[in-house]
Amino acid sequence: MADFDRKTFRQIVQDGKGDSILNYEFNVIEITDIEKDEELNLMFLRLQLGAPLNAGEKLNAMRGSMRDFIFKVLGKHDYLEYLNIPKRRFWRELTAAQIAANFFSLQEGSGFTRTRFVDLQEFFKRYSQFDSAGRRRAALIVERLDNLCAALTKSRKVVVKNRAIGVSIFFFVNMLIETKNSNQISKFLEFLNVFLERLKEQVAKGISIEDRYKYLLNFQSYVSQAAVEKYAVENRQYFLKEYFDYYLENNSIKGDH
Image (cartoon, rainbow, N blue to C red; front, top):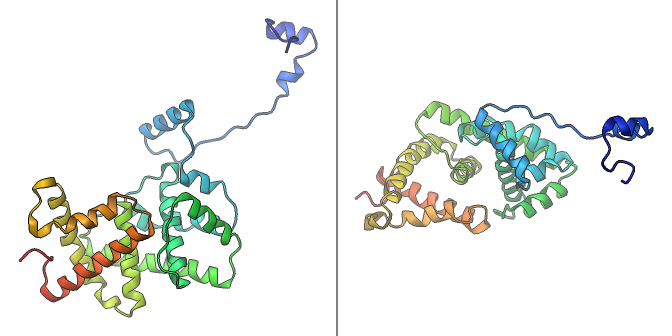
């Protein structure tokens, strides 16, 4: 670098070295779909501070059928808009990947699965090329999400802004369809509206939570702690099943009486 040390650009050009600078190639990335100024500010700060890529951004860098399905189709589904998941940094696509990984696992008869980044990375690799079964399962996820969105639109009551709960709602409705109980979906959404309201009001009480509702703290722990672990996903489903069955019999939330 001695040829450039302490020299102006004019001097470098005069020395016949200017082309090495003018012909230097560098990458330019255009950032689009920035909806709010604060999102642009967050992006600027992240780039300036060298913040590491999150799981969604790393998955976006992968290639293959599953990656394209998640980032071009499933991640754009209206259900993720309904859950109010931010668009920035591929948060919606990450949630879509977690749904897809569990759905494929269930369809294969393996039950729920853990969905940390390393698990999703392996999932994307395993389905880098869709076979006929993979295409059918991908189409079925979209169909089931369409069914759920239609039911939610008709209900107009349930408000969900938590990704873990949103994932569990999908899989509970999926279970109702799989077990030929789709006629219970509207009743489940009715139950869910009451259940989530009770959960919110009781969790807000902290240590003052009423004894008859303390069991709700177990559900909250599966939502807020290690929510993508297999046991957490499974236990949320067991919990919803127990409380929904009680609601069907008594038309009230367990603990109300």
